[in-house]
Image 1 (spheres, rainbow, N blue to C red):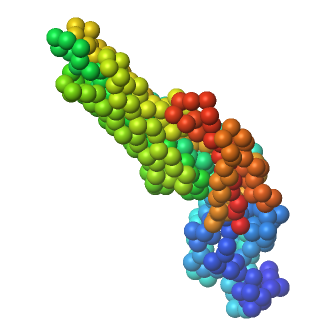
Image 2 (cartoon, rainbow, N blue to C red):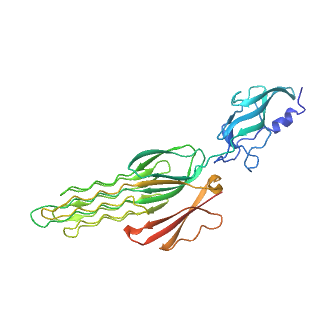
Length: 354
């Protein structure tokens, strides 16, 4: 039986491409390789029925099991019913002389949540694979601390070692493309110097692709004349802080390590070792770095579209910053403990997506 539709009407009904849409944590199908949200209630979603012409491709995307299609054969100015198809089982490309009518989409409505904190606290290189949705992430990177040097030994009173510098800190708010691999590097704390020996530098922590990093603190040093503290590491991201330099010696007492510029135990510099005749001691290792990737929760994050704007709101010392303005969503509250003391400088990260 021939369809009552004419080819003129059918061609007007073919799916227009390209089509602006965003997949995020939603079911979608692929039309000519473009991800189209499979939800008629979404303003950017697919509208059924949808028609495809010869040579167009159709396939399932995330959270879609199959697509029900009616195939028609073009017969002059009308259409003849050909077959009921299940995509992708019965193919993915519309054959020559045919048109496809998308009737229904079988999808998974129980979409999992990928929210949470992914923390890397041991020195080394790791692979992080972003969730199969385009989600926003607050990334925090801590450089490793430099190692303190050993004290100087000799016949009389000799100087103690210098402390290693604290690691830097960087923070940023980024859109992570779905199912993308990132190389996460956690810096290695510098080794302590032996008696009469310097420490070693702390190494950088970083996350590839988004290009955020924090350098490690520099080693403490020792010589027959004095023990000197190492320089601090710095951050390279959207929000950056420099650590604290290591301290020089005080007589035969080793200089303390510089504190890391962050709100955790990662990245502190190692103290210098004791000096003196017959009592000289080795220094202390610097602390390893750290990387935190924090995936947000809630529909505001799950539905985020690019481009996105970010905002950092600072508070006065020991005073919480103001809340995110209307229309902005909070990504997280952090604080910088200045050099191991009790004073804290808080900051709140906010974002807004159009």
